[in-house]
Image 1 (spheres, rainbow, N blue to C red):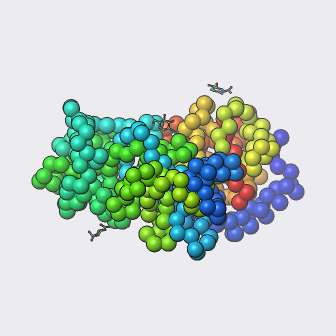
Image 2: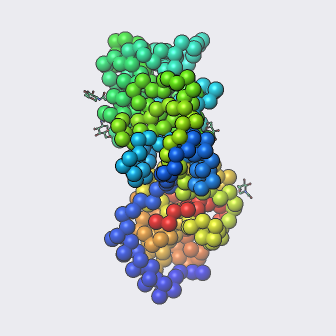
Image 3: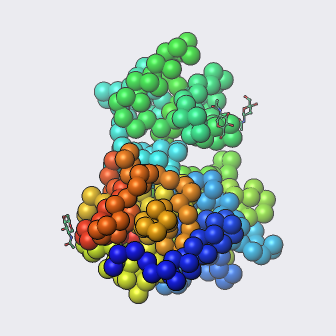
Length: 384
Ligand SMILES: *[C@@H]1O[C@H](CO)[C@@H](O)[C@H](O)[C@H]1NC(C)=O
Ligand SMILES: *[C@@H]1O[C@H](CO)[C@@H](O)[C@H](O)[C@H]1NC(C)=O
Ligand SMILES: *[C@@H]1O[C@H](CO)[C@@H](O)[C@H](O)[C@H]1NC(C)=O
Ligand SMILES: *[C@@H]1O[C@H](CO)[C@@H](O)[C@H](O)[C@H]1NC(C)=O
C-alpha cells in the first residue's frame, strides 16, 4: 500500500475538516462509572472488577472533579473509592500522580544518617538531609508550582497538613524531591529563604493502598481524617455534598454507593507492524490510541513505560497526499510532542508509509518510523 486512493482521500479530507471544526472532546483515558447500589466496600470492589476495571483510583484534583461529575444523582452523600488501609506503612509524596515521576525517581530519598527514626509520619529537610517528624509541628515549607515548574518557599509556619492545603490552593502541592539535583536546588532555596533550618517537604507516610495496585499517593482527606474513629475504619469514601471532594475513612462493612473506573488504554506487549497492530486493536478493542491532548499523553506515558520495545505504536500516520500527519479518526495533530527532527519536515512518500510511535523511555516523545517495524502498541477502549 502506498498512499490512499483519491475517493478515500476526499473522504478523509472531509472527515478531517469536520473533526477539526467539531471535535473538542478529549477522550479520557480512565473513565469513572457511578453505581447506584448500596454495597459494602468489598462487594463494591467485586462489582467494579466484574463490570469495569476496579473501584476508582484518584491521581490528582482533576480526577476528583471527573469522579464527582460521574455521580449524577443529587441525593448521594458519599461514594466508596478504591482506597483501603493495609499493614504496610510506606513513605510517599503528597504530589501523588504517578505521571509526575519517571523510572523509580519517586523512590529517591536523602535521609539523614539514623533517620527515619520513627518519630513522625511527615518529613522535613534540615539542612539538605531529611528527618521524619510529627506532622502537627509547625514549620515553614516549600511548595511546587507545576505551571511555572518553580519551588516556592513559604515563611509562615504551619502543620504539614495546613502546608499541604496552602500549596494545593496557591500552587500545585508540597514539593517533591526526585533526585540529587532537585535536592540541591531545593536546599539552596531553603538556605536563602529561611533562618530556621527545618522545612516541610511533601514526603509523608501512610498505609493506604489502591485496590488496583496503582502507585498514586494522592490523598485528599477531610480535616482531621483519617481518624479511625470507629476503631475499624479501613476503607475510604469521597463526600459528594458537604465537604464535596474530600475523603473520610469508614467501616468497610457499611453500605454505600460507589464509583468504579474503567481503563481506556491497554498496552499490548506483542511485536507487530503498525498495520497488524491497527487490525488487532480494531478487532479486540476500539482503535489504536490517538494522543490529542497533554492529558492523554500523560496516560500514554504511564502505559508506554511498561513496554518491552523502545517505541510503542500510536494511531498516528502520515498522509502523503497532503503531506501532513493525522490521527486515525481523521483529526489533525494539534497537540504535538515530536522528538527533535521528527514530524515536522517533509516525509519521503516514495517508499513505505510513515507512521508514528512514542518512545517508551526518556522524554517519551513521538517519532516517525516505517510501518514495518515490529513494536508493542496501545489500544483504546474509548468510543469517542
Ligand atoms: C493561599 O495564599 C494566600 C496568600 O498568601 C493565603 O492567605 C491563603 O491562606 C492561602 N491558602 C491556603 C489554603 O492556605
Ligand atoms: C503557580 O501556578 C498558578 C497556576 O496554577 C499560576 O497562576 C501562578 O502564577 C503560579 N505562581 C507562581 C509563583 O509561579
Ligand atoms: C509502583 O512502583 C513500583 C516501584 O517504583 C514499581 O515496581 C511498580 O511497577 C509500580 N506499579 C505500578 C502499577 O505502576
Ligand atoms: C519484542 O521485542 C523486544 C525488543 O526486541 C523483546 O525484548 C521482546 O522479548 C519481544 N517480545 C515478544 C513478545 O516477542
